Image (tube, rainbow, N blue to C red; front, side, top):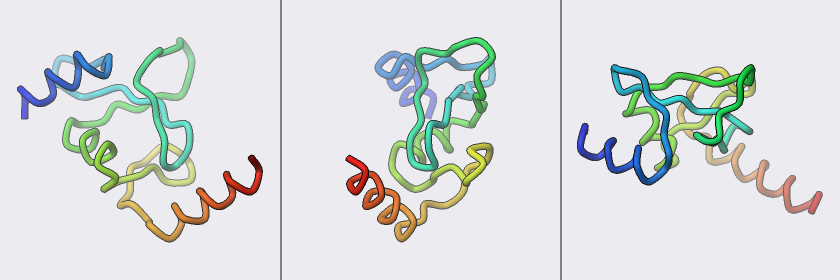
Amino acid sequence: MNAIMEILKAKNGLTTDAAGNVIVVPTSPYEFRTAPLREGEAALLIGPEAYIGLLLGLYQFDDTLKNIVPFDTERFGEFIRAGIATA
């Protein structure tokens, strides 16, 4: 896992702590960014497995954007349809 995370760290501009946890900024239940990080914004420190799970669409954030939960396909469809309707 360490080798994979080193590749992802370089490719995606990740900020990590000494234990290898990744700082992410949730922007919706289904989206997040890892850079740029801005002082004072709500960010989460998540483990490498959770980060990879987010990338693979296995996990998402809850409605508070403070916790990681299993991906909900039905709610994601609603999210996409709402975005298309407002575009």
